[in-house]
Image (cartoon, rainbow, N blue to C red; front, side, top):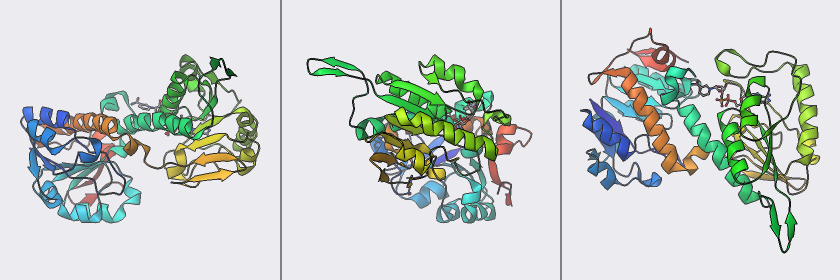
Amino acid sequence: MRIGVPKETVANERRVALTPDVAGRLVKSGSSVLVERGAGEAASFGDDAYGAAGATPVATAAQAFGQSDIVLKVQPPSAQEARLCREGSALVALFQPSAEREAVSQLAARTVTAFSLALLPRITRAQPMDVLSSQATVAGYKAVLLAAAATGRFFPMLVTAAGTLPPARVMVLGAGVAGLQAIATARRLGAVVSAFDVRAAVKEQVESLGAKFLELQVGEQAEAAGGYAKQLSEETHRRELAFLAQQVKDADIVITTAAIPGKRAPILITADAVRGMKPGAVIVDLAAETGGNCEVTKPGTEVRHNGVVVLGPLNLPSTLPLHASQMYARNISSFLLHVTRDGRLVVDFDDEIIRDTCVTHAGEVRKT
Ligand code: NAD
């Protein structure tokens, strides 16, 4: 089987779908790996390292797409990339089909079997392939570093000859994969951390990381099938906003990560609540990509609102490209193992992982 790894073309994307280490393992198991020159450079994986692992360098994207049985990518395929795919080949990337309609119809037209890892079910069996979790781990970690760089305070308590400085008070809203990593990272830096989530099940996880869980009687079932949160009723959301407006008053740093699959991110901090915060407080809104958890967030930029700094970073995993790529490569190679037997693609729609992730197959669009 020939596996193609093109260079990512989206601006500011520094990750690569396969690292030399994982490429080497695939070569040892009998595949050829075609890597476009420079594909790993921004993640600090040079062409030489791929060559030493037994991969074959190719000069152009057209070769990486056109000569491969299966192409591995990080970012969604563009319509132009879809046209480069060989008829009947396969492609794996991370995308929402509804946001990539033109590319998806091109993939179907070229009878490409395309899989999106964004659609992977969050089941135990799929954990080794779970790029949503691995990349959210990176985002949660990096969010704390951004906050630490933007605040005028130390995170740990310091007792010095120049006086005693209290620890920073960090609040994390949404304690899924990114939120839990943010809690752990802020704790390691010595902050006093509290966290809130509508799913009561996370209380124990938050406390086991040494953070305080902020309790609000939600009074409705907030967890849907698959462990994701549901959208709250209007009344409960109103109570949540009032509760959080009180809580954020004491925080030096707020990191928000709340998301509802397939929907705009819920607002957790209104512009009024920001006005109630301390001058110099920092909000890092990890939900900026899906509209933001804070009413004043501007995706991709920094705003100041009444002395509060609000950051809305986009594509944080790309800012830690070496480890983000390493985790992504392990995830995607586990997926590859799952969809191939003896060097051939096996598309078994009785399998939940394949059924949920397959976007196009045999000329048909299966997920819109
Ligand atoms: P996510 O990115 O969809 O959401 C982040 C967090 O925001 C969630 O914890 C959610 O409960 C919370 N949230 C949503 N609306 C909120 C609101 N109004 N106020 C406060 N918080 C709100 O979540 P995720 O990190 O992708 O994790 C989703 C679920 O999947 C979790 O239960 C997680 O444990 C589970 N999971 C399972 C596996 C597996 O078994 N393979 C792997 C990873 C995650």
